[in-house]
Amino acid sequence: MPGGSRYGKMPDNTYPSSDNHSKLRRSQTSPEYQNTIKQTLMSMGYEIPRVGETVVNYANKRDRKSTRALRRIQIPLYVLLREKKYNHFDIWS
Picture 1 (spheres, rainbow, N blue to C red):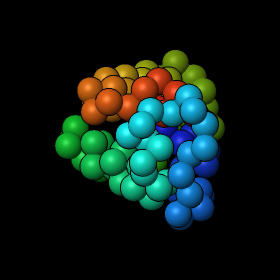
Picture 2 (picture 1 turned 45 degrees about the vertical axis):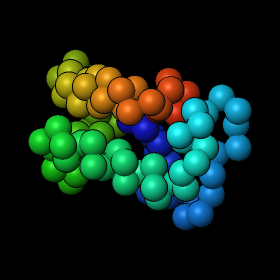
Picture 3 (picture 1 turned 120 degrees about the horizontal axis):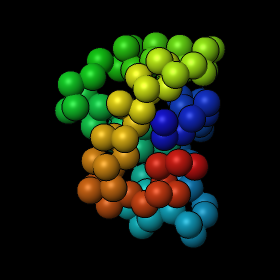
Picture 4 (picture 1 turned 90 degrees about the horizontal axis):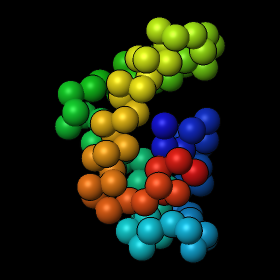
């Protein structure tokens, strides 16, 4: 998921410094980007606590079932974020 294990732990008013990030992502603070992720997940019909449970379940088990559950969220989220003009590096770094 975007932000990975750092999700929710990034400093509030920081901007990404890498040129690998899209212009859109470089214009956002970490909380602004995280809000975009939350809003996108909610627009997909997901409840944020449930997504968190899915991520934790995957991190603890890493079995086929938990991998499938996480991928059912990740792939459509990735597509929607790309449609919003985020690049691969924005999403997976």
